[in-house]
Image 1: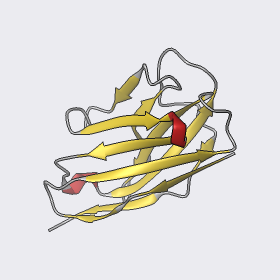
Image 2: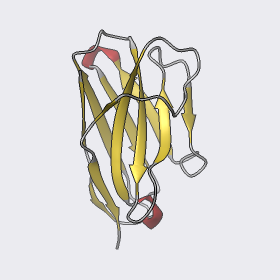
Image 3: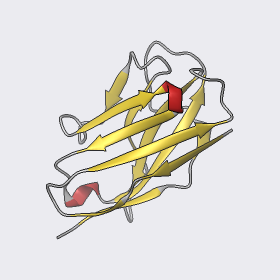
Image 4: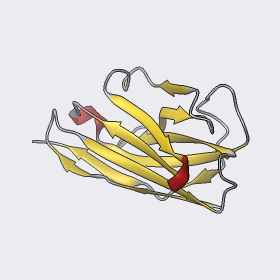
Length: 123
């Protein structure tokens, strides 16, 4: 069971990036996915998550209105579209999977983690 992130990079303030998280080895639709990030010198924080059905999503206050999480079950991939990026969005972004079927999305209890992808927002 693995998840892998891609799509990070260097972007100017106000720019956009789309991160992808591809899950392999999981029973299709039987897991929730969350995005976390860790900035230099700070603890890891939850950014967003989506349930297996896609019917429930949540966002950290810092992400609301700027980030959108979505999923393509046919591709076993979850996307995090990040718009209007700010320097404080800089960090390593991780996706993580949690087995099971959930009505509500939560940002705890994730067991399978990717290696992370660097996002740098700088002019």
